[in-house]
Image 1 (tube, one colour):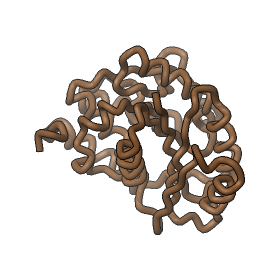
Image 2 (tube, one colour; image 1 turned 90 degrees about the vertical axis):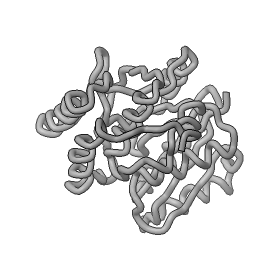
Image 3 (cartoon, rainbow, N blue to C red; image 1 turned 90 degrees about the horizontal axis):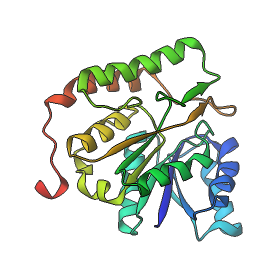
Length: 242
């Protein structure tokens, strides 16, 4: 199977080079697409240097002007992957909060039939390292809130470490995705679930970033909070039913 890892970046110069090395060195031939939103710290320049040096065949870059949102970055990456016949498409953060070695475990779950494999912090065996108690409570509380509001049987609905099968991305109406921040993660899983996709959760250890600055903001949180309330009342169609 052809596999593509998508990593959106904004000011990740400290992390991007080692992340490229980790992903491209894994067994299983994972290609990597970096989608950079005009990072002023030169993140994209580091990617271009690696492409020119030795990684051009499996390392790809999309440069966008300004911060256009996490969701729009992934949607652009999904479309790019579908146009190039990838079978499995992964979402992953650049800051090593997600361990690249766990890509193999998500791949294995997809090989067993999962349409969406979620790297989950909140199932048995999963955990979070180096977060203050307040942030952990907010994150875990958000997952409980999503489950209560939507009845979706996913313990870590806000997770950003995810594998989507090609069938899933071809089935979902990507043009109909409305949330652009971290609510995007919830909306994608919920839409897949509503359309009958099989979702599996894989326990992971999530480690707080050591380098760089978190991109979480109050506006992103607000979009997700209120957007979730609307999800059960929306009509979700398969792409070809539009």
